[in-house]
Image 1 (tube, rainbow, N blue to C red):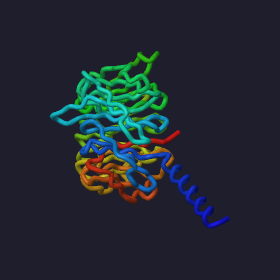
Image 2 (tube, rainbow, N blue to C red):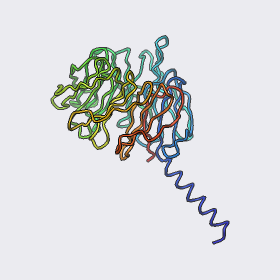
Image 3 (cartoon, rainbow, N blue to C red):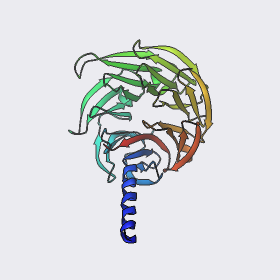
Image 4 (cartoon, rainbow, N blue to C red):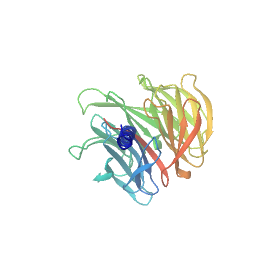
Amino acid sequence: MSIRWWALGVLAVTSASAAAARSAVLLVLNKASNELAIVDPVSHQVLGRVPTGLSPHEVTASADGRLAFVSNYGTGEAPGNSISVIQIEPPKEVRRFLLDPMSRPHGIWFAGGRVYFTAEANKLIGSYDPAASRVNWLLGTGQNSTHMVLVSPDGNRIFTANIGSDSITEFERTGGPMAWNGTVIPVGKGPEGMDLSPDGRELWTAHSGDGGVSIIDAAAKRVVQTLRIGTKRSNRLKFSPDGRLVLVSDMGGGELVVLDARARKEVKRLSLGRSPEGILMPPGESRAYVAVAGENHVAILDLKTLTVAGQIETGSGPDGLAWAQRK
């Protein structure tokens, strides 16, 4: 083989490898600069930036990894009322769907071709159909500050974290798409971050107001244990993909708390800097990402050694995180 053709072959292999690596991207919301950053998780380079609505807080990705959906929460003086629909490649906002008269969309979750969202100011959850570009379902929670939403993998249960009512609501499907029963589960003060265990048996939620974590038996719909972990202002809580660990970000303390899910105890506390917020643990990965809003970067955590392995400079005030895997 000539040198010229060998060089072209290497270039082709390198390009193919880069394309394969970029089949998954890290999505980071920079809420202080009103944008979504699309990051290559291998090179840690920002591949694109897309303007969103005012003060975006949470992001989710479609099952095929081609679209991102962003809740534009707004500020104290200017409540947000829209969802940004963003094409990941090439990066651009393809639609900004207005939710009027609803406002303060925050939690957002893609499941079964729908985008589930909270409308915090209206004590509602709803679903947006991106194919038809319309809201096709609404359900009241009757709870104050319905902030986060989570849908079980089978689509038959929906959980909401209601900060102002100190409660988690578990909705369970009882029939067709419109038939749901809701159970309000009292927890500690100011529940916000929450996650369902990989086996679907437990929902854990971190209380932003009293430094505790409630463990809920999802089938019994009741708290079975409360952990006192002493956080100053917990923000997010996530299970590792294998269900072994639970991570809690403490905005007030500048720390990430690592819990052993089976032993129900703290195993490590990592100092990350000012305002650690969003947490992401991609499936099949041995690392976690934590948005450190006050430091304008995303910290990379090695889940095997429980150490900080690096950081990604993403922009101003990173918060919500998601993983987009191209199918």
